[in-house]
Length: 140
Image (cartoon, rainbow, N blue to C red; front, side, top):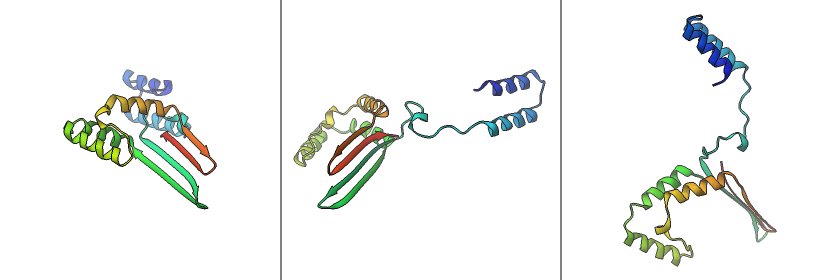
């Protein structure tokens, strides 16, 4: 809370101004405050909401673009739900993932690992530039 707002509330608490006067003064303060800065630097740490993957590529002379914005709540819920899947089903899912070329072990997926990943991604942007593609992975 800023100092001017606190002063107004103190005056109200002391009975030196009425609630209506305090409301008008606070409204006037809000009108004269600059809007918060936009962009990644203004985002409070730990408040990321999306994992964003952007891919621009050129294949066979044609430009392609992929822009995926995944809500982190969906990922968090998925990790929690994965913990409820019986080990036999996870084994089968891992086998299918591996058979499809995705070497990922669902039995090793833990909620705390996801939070650590989100924390690290919050502080960085991964960019890959190749002659035919550009890949960016970041949180917003």
